[in-house]
Length: 245
Ligand code: PEP
Image (tube, rainbow, N blue to C red):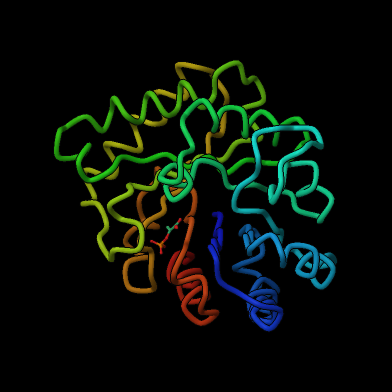
């Protein structure tokens, strides 16, 4: 299972120490095969990498600029620069970035640029509350997937994260049946584009130590993308412990 910590716009050099306790946990046999990825702000990526490069945790960025090459884009960071920090992953398509103007076409460019650098993409998709209420979740997911992945062949370097927007940071989690239905739809839609084996679909949205066990029991879920709860090492560890029997 994957456990991805999305720190969003939080953190300082001291926060990085929080990973020590997670590294200790990974030494226990039961947890050896899980995959931990920390996604701190850009400013901490290199420090994080230097400190933990010999451990079995990985780092990733939370976004990137769509332009692959170096260029006149003040204040921006592209996948080449992210790669140079030691990062192996990039979150792309997070709803907070979609909200800031990232269209499916921009997201497609970002994914292509990340894959060109051989980075692994954590591709976020999910419907808003209005879309859910209008009963157009499938239509939205299909559009996000098909445009986001247009002209992409390297699907094996993409991890999907289903994050209903109404669930992020709200404490609300979809009902089990609804979640399974949407995860199955996502899998089917991906398989229609490429018959890759081993599709990984994570769930994200208000995962915490109280709901992790039940969510982890859902076969269609290969791990979690965790925002708020990942800022607290104890909560993050509790989520891992509750998810793995
Ligand atoms: C997220 O931002 O990707 C997320 C899932 O946040 P939270 O866990 O806080 O809902």
